[in-house]
Image (cartoon, rainbow, N blue to C red):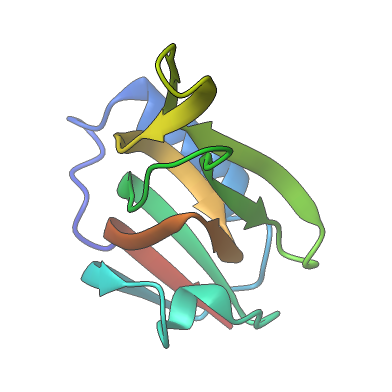
Length: 133
């Protein structure tokens, strides 16, 4: 938030910053843009010394099929489950009676987390900040 012009920041962003800035005693704020796969990314590993503030978080589901439903699990600063964001659409195939998941994208704005765990997703875009202790 080093570069945010607070006079022009939205009320949602101001509220988000007030909440997140009290979660850890941060020393650095790093603007961060990431586009790629979850595999090997820093977002899936818990570290008590970091919190991510996502101004935009976009994910996609990568497969369709019976019972496939994409989601992403967010954890808070003490690595406790914060919320599960599910995204996907089910369609029923009357020819081969079964439900099938359709590939969808999901976008969320102004959310924070310490780590995330993908379920049925492979790629994502993160645009926001990382707070480090």
